[in-house]
Length: 396
Length: 221
Image (cartoon, rainbow over all chains, first blue to last red; front, side, top):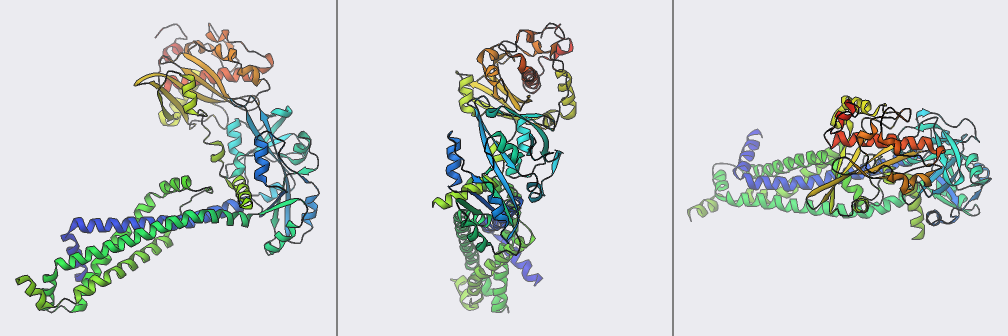
């Protein structure tokens, strides 16, 4: 076997440029394949992580699309629709519910903030339930609010950086002319929380004059709960809209699947081109060595020996290409991530391309399979050469 | 289809990584193409350069900048690795000036102090790109910004950013606070301007104004 390997290797070296180009072709196909599979894995796990980091699996908002509400708000209208505060009690009664946390989002326009003014948004959260649901949040400075009605704020890392705030500093809610004291700065999480300014729910209700009203309720569902059934129950609540995060995930995955199908098609075409390239290279090599193979057979080599020799040549080409492609995919993973982020309508935080050992093994499996399949015809062709015919063709 | 948009909107609202909302927290112009054309009407192009104290000289450079500023870089966010965005403005092939902004801590929020400079480091324009203040209207008034025009780093060396008072003859004395109650933000604006000018001197002007600091304005370059 070692001898066959040596001979096959030397045969490939006889046409360095052609062998090199074929390896590059296979390498590119392997690169696309590894990157694509890595993206498939990375995107889903990052999305799951982002959803887990939300701390709840379902959100109930006031009826009417939140998209419309936000548009209204940004255009200067009163915008947001509210739910009565007692909705949390109704939801808590359901046996599937582990915990709920009420929220109230408000925004103000400060005409002097930016060159053409600017909005600041504040999220009112319940100090009794919100920190428990977001147990992964850690503080860089300070802690949660000292009192459920305190005029205090906790800032996500990016919000604090942008506002240059530290614990003890003041924050001005411009339109309302209200000062709140910063009591906590969160560590960076890579999620929406980084840019959020949290205030106690009751303080936001008081400042904005929307007593006992909410814009959303986060629901943590028990692990063994029947989610579709629970969703149905929530839909029956009056004047609310239910968004489950499994639904959100499904929607995102549906949107992303279009991009995935496109890239998978490109990968498939790349693989097909590389298969044709391999067959072409090996077949040309067999044609060029027609007489040589004839002499080999006349010296006692069996059809199987010749078949193996050519097959091994194909495998060497494919494995080399696979190695180059995998190395290329590992080296350009970050670049691929940047490109993918530009292309997709939504990309979660964290690594989008995850290449691990199982993926590398899988790619090698595919590449070897391609090698074995594309090598069959040229190897059979070489193995079936008739010695006399081959030698005669040399004389002619 | 409408429902799909709704769900997608909630998804984006909840899950979108925050960099996509705020961008990197350095101090970039909001709209460089528009802003450069507005600040330098004769310009035909500009070049953007990102630098940090860490890259350009590390702790030694930070110590030198702090010494020139007369104050330590403070807090969680005024750090050695903050990226500064320098805009070099061109007219044809000729460089005609610079635009540079810094973040500064104001009384109620972050302040972004932008300076428009000529090739000698003379202030041609001053403005707040971002400001949260009870007195934002008065501080944003063009008359306030015009007080900075014509000043250089030399004028700021005798201004003590810690006490907010001059320590000798200083061009800063001519800058008047429009509202006495806005004193914290007024002082933040002056500290931001001095820091901004020092950084431009270190990063672009080759420390042209360092001798003034060393001799406190006795020598001329």
